[in-house]
Length: 238
Length: 238
DNA sequence: GTATAGTTTGTGGTCAGACCACAGCTCGTC
DNA sequence: GACGAGCTGTGGTCTGACCACAAACTATAC
Image (spheres, protein in one colour):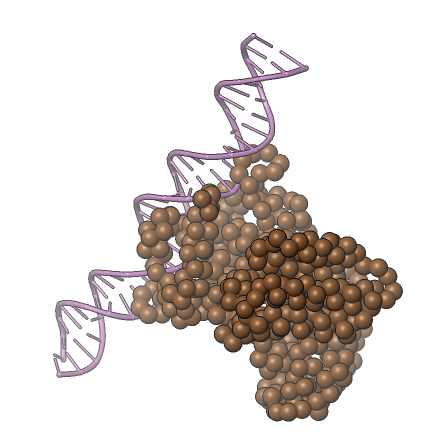
């Protein structure tokens, strides 16, 4: 009597989770066809599809129509997408206040850059892509949207350099959740060229602090960088 | 030509997200009945159901059968559930290494207790529930499972006291993702009474550091508390 | 023997319809 | 007025059907 009236789609979800935990399913593997899964678990195909839809949004599987090895539902375990959907929708539904999202970014990104700076004292983490993005951002013909996209890439590249997949995915989700606000805020700025120039300088100083191993300086720089932008666009006042 | 071949369930998801963003839907509101939603959006009911399932797992809605005001799909925006599902499944599918989950907990919980300690210097955050949980944990007749459940509650209560919903939900998700590992690890300990007694002392010292406003001490205490347990159960070696 | 074109097969994507369980509401009876 | 039976609207589930698509297969032409 462990499970009373478990819903059909949850049966499917639990079965897949168990298969993952017990090693019967691993990234790259195919799930059985929907019709087979339905028959095996004794549920309808529509219930199977509801569970697969959840797995897809959560970034666990990728589905493709057709035939052959690339078709069907394949375990991919790509955490970014699911995190972004979750955070975006929770912010939209007012489950996550924007201010809390920003504060969490401060914590995570502060920790990321501090960790990178520490690492720089003993080894040389790969920060070339971060540096390349900064160079690309110095192109003066960028639109606001292009600039913000590169800005997002820069922050993401730092997270990736930290090597922590959980922090990277979480940060990407937080970022995408408030992307709309960042875009909207840019429109209300007094002077975009002035702001973007300042952001660039701050990016440079963050990277410099990391490369020279100044953990605390890097942390403070990235935190004031983030909170400064959102204060300027008055997002936290919402 | 903004949307080429958007899948039917995504149409529904986008419509709901837009309604949320534009304020046509707010927490507490009812979604239209599935059949109505299907007709309005020009999709089949099963596609609507796939989208609603996603929203439900993400913690955005709650569904109930029957009739009357409490029936139907209601916006609830409860972030905890979605975060837990996401993290649990990602860990199961090896998208999130357990070591990264633990490291992220170190960052977030360290920040939580440091923030609480700072707050204690100027005001008095409500930490009574945290203290009550600690008292309950001193009951010597607790089983391992009961102790671990209270342990989880203690950490969660600290997060809640911080007032940051995003950090709280994320931390709860991280915790639940590795709950199975924590449980399994407890079985392999040399001496559970000895370990649980040590954990209790650490809890007390964490709370004491917070209440006396020692931010750095609190941060270090909680971090060594967490990493100590996982090192002892050799989870990070996986 | 090879290359091409047509066919078959297996898959997810979608829809329509049916039925059930359930919770509240309505209305008639006492 | 109180109670109960039936009605209504809702989500939960299943079935069957059809489509689109991509690969594998097969037959044909050269």
